[in-house]
Amino acid sequence: MDRLDFLHQYKLTSIVLAVVIAWLTVFIINKVIHNFFQKTNFLEERKEQTIESMIRSLTKYTATLTVIFFAISQYVNNFGRVLAGAGIVGVIVGFGAQSLIKDILSGIFLIYEKQLHKGDFITVNNTFNGTVEEIGLRFLKVREWSGKLLTISNGEVKQIQNYNIDQMRVIERVVVSYREDPSKVLEILKIACEKINESNEPCLKKDSSDCVVEPFQVYGMTSINANFRGIEYTITGLVDDTLYWDAAKEARRIIAQTLYDYKIKLAEDTMVVKSLVAKESIQRD
Image (tube, rainbow, N blue to C red):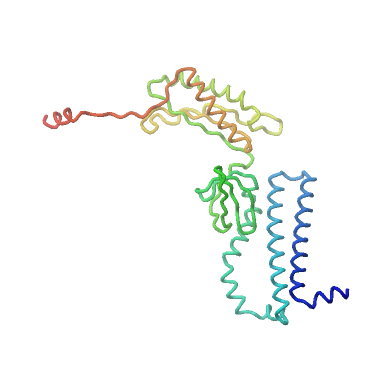
């Protein structure tokens, strides 16, 4: 105790000691939470990772603010009274911290309303696409497919499109030439759907009794003049959200291969060129 009293006589030493204690506290809390989720499975892995990410952010900010207030208190007498009576300063800081409070509240609501989880593939504000890497109190970190890491303030998140909410529907559109027989095209697309269901069976969404909810099927003819190019047909299938991209890639491959095997021509852009001489003769007439 005498040694501790001696150390407390030096304010800088006390501050350094507070920093070490805060760091150790944050480390221990995060380690305990991580080990707890590693040994339990009553929540989905994505939800556990999301909660763990939020707790890490919360402990970090709490420890930082605690150390800052402690350091100030070492050099300001009656810091508690000063802090309680600083009404004007509080108003000024309040206005300056509006964006901070907005980010924190937005982050809490993102978690509470279950709009996203760590590992989800999302589109933010209809602009940024990527996988959620971290959800903090202030920032949302999204890793793009190219590898870039986007850091977005929670308060700036206006719209989220989440591709990982229990299920996803693969929708593939095929535009076929006008010269192809529609009835023949429909039959060939049905053959393609059978192949897709066989190949993508592990990806298909199943109910509690392990029955497929919605297999791949020909939705129908969705346009008879798609962009003035040809007739559009649509194929759909309900798959597990975590396997959506693999299922979609495999479905496209099988559709393309089946159309090729049966010599079905897809629509092509055409350009009609009229000669200048023919145009002038028409104008004279």
